[in-house]
Length: 152
Image 1 (cartoon, helix red, strand yellow):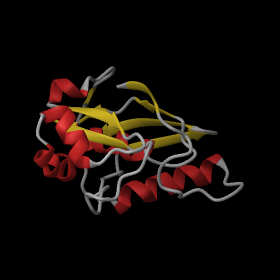
Image 2 (cartoon, helix red, strand yellow):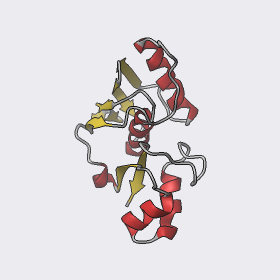
Image 3 (cartoon, one colour):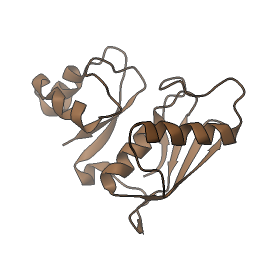
Image 4 (cartoon, helix red, strand yellow):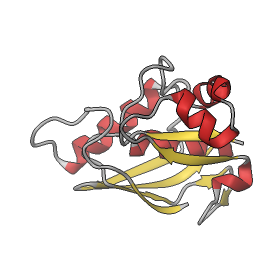
């Protein structure tokens, strides 16, 4: 996908005051693992508010979830996605080509409102909720700045 800008002050608050870049890397790995995302073949490099993802994701769906989850961390402003899928590096990946896209939640959004925008049907919100599990625990718990995966 390349470089993705995210809202720095939104997301899971996993960093402590004064965490080194190495400690931030460890915490992002643990954060990804808490959502059952496989990090065995992924390298994470954090420099201040930027995270670079290299290595290999199991499949395109894991790649999209890993990128979104890494971007949903308070204190991260950019995600440099250089992940391969299996053995093949996919640079400048357009998630729309894989029947999904990213959406950044804004104040006042609900999954129903987002579903209405993308699908013209507010009752289609479970499709978005399912695509973002386990990052989303409840359809009612989204916040401004959060990156969501929107399947087509």
